Length: 448
Image (cartoon, rainbow, N blue to C red):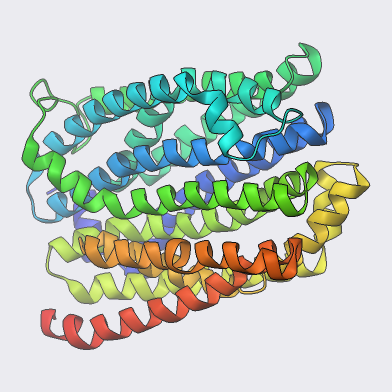
C-alpha cells in the first residue's frame, strides 16, 4: 500500500491535519493575499471606480467558481474515499472524468458569459461609470476560464490524493508570477484593469502546465492513463452528487452578490459597491484560511470514513472546528479595531474609506461563528452526506441572508445592507448546531 495511504489510515490525526492543512492554508492565504494586493494595485493605479467595477464581477466569478467546484470538490472527495476503500482504478477513472468535465464546462461557460456580458453586468448593478471597468476585466478572464477550471480542479485532486505540499507549490507559483506581472501591466504598460486580468490568466496557464505534468508522470498513486478519460455516467453522477453542495454554496454566493450590489447601489451608490469589494477581499482572506483547514481535513476524513475508521474522522473534524474558530476570532478583533487602517490600503478616497470603515465593523459582528458553520458543512461533504451538506449550505445564503437583504435596507438604509450578514451568520450557526447535534446523537453513534 502507498505510504501516503498508510499515513492517512494510521498516522497521528493532529499531525496529519497540520501536514495537510498548512500547505493548503499557505496556498489559499497566498491566493487571498494576491487578490487583496491586486485590488490595491487596481485601486491605487486605476481608481476607486475600478474597485467598484471589480466588485460587480463577483457574481460571474462566483458562478464560474461554482461550476469548477462542482467537479473539483466532488472528484477530490470521491478519489479520497476510493483510495480509502483500496479501489485505485476507480480513483484513476474519476481523475480522467474530472479533467474532461472541467474542459467541457469551462468552455461552455466562457462562450455563454461572453455573449451576454453587458446585460449581465447591468443586472448585477453596473452603472455607466463602472461598466467599462467590469467589462474589460471579465473579457480577459473569460477567455482564460477553461484554464482556471482545469488548474484549480486538478490541483484539488493533487491535494486530496496525498500531495498537499505539491498542491501548495503550484498555487504559490501562479501567485508569484501574478504579483510580478500585475504591477508591470498596470503601472508600466498602462493596461489598466485589463492588465490585472491578463496577469491572472498567464500565471494560471503556467500553473496548469505544472499540475498536468504531475499526473502525466505516472509516479503518483492516482495518475493519467489512456483509459481514464472515457466518461462514465456512474462516476459523473458520483462526482456531481458530492460536488453539488459546494456548487450550491457558490451559486448562492452569486445570487447574494447580485442582490448585495443592487441594494448597495440603491442605498449607497457606486462607492458603497466599492466598499463591499474591499470588505469582501478581507473576509475572503479569513474564509480561505478556514477553507485551508477544511481542505486539510477532507482527505483525512474522506479516507478514514471510507476505511470505516470513524473515530479518526471525527477527531479531525473536532480539531478543524477549533482552529477555524480561532482564525475567525482573530479576524473579528482585527476588523473591529483597525477598520480605517485596512481601508486605506486600497484607496485614498476619503468617501470610500469612511463607508468601508463603518461597513466592515458591522459586517464582522458574528464572524466568530462562521468557522463552525464552514467546517461542519465541509465535514458532511467529506463523508459523502451530500443532502445534509446541501441543506447547511443553503441555510445562510437563501433561507436567511436573501430575505434579510430585502427586509433590512428599506428599514435601516445602507446600514441595513451591512447588518443582514451578521444576522444571517447567527441564525445559520444555530441551525448548523442543531443539525450536527441530531446527526451526532442519532447517526454517528450507531455507525461507530
